[in-house]
Image (cartoon, rainbow, N blue to C red; front, side, top):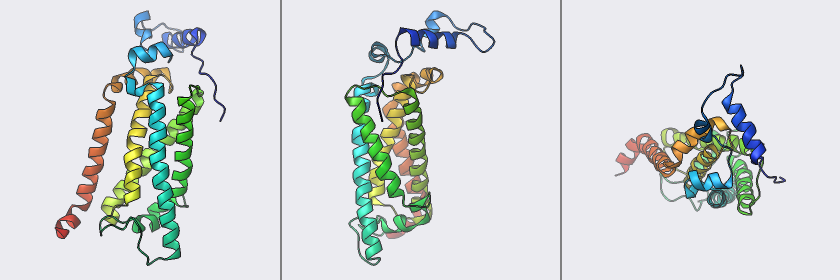
Length: 245
């Protein structure tokens, strides 16, 4: 994927401000001060308005670390999956107790949402994520369309892990160790990169205000998301857990 510089020069910013200042009928909206809220992302704006964690370099590390966690867990799941195919009755590394075991999840319909094992999605998606993080860390600028496509992938990842969390808790009544590690890395990855992209204008000027409102609360979003997952697991598996006590 060739990296190019975002069109964030004065001309691009003027064009963006013009588009925000007029609607389709040509009517003017907003004062100059209000339009400043929606300035196109640039280095000075990043340091003035965006929390340090959501700036380019930290987000690059979020992509690399989150992607590495997901890729490692996906690789381990692949090994476990192959082992299970070779020896269906054999024990897996992740078979810790009746509640934490990978086999049921891997071999269920939910383990192949698109008709092939989810681990293939993980291997590809997390490799792309790491590559994107490296590109950001070396200082290259990816085009806006790339971030839009990447965001679609993040939304898809969030939807998939949420479905798997619900399925594991309410249908299987069992948790997959490597899956939980993937969830642990994916949640901050999705939340922080999404808020950063909103706040810096990579997903369009209309979302900047909302992104900057969320920027100071980014870690709160991550913690609340973790708590929601814990709540899903406890509610879904409560009866089974109580019987085991």
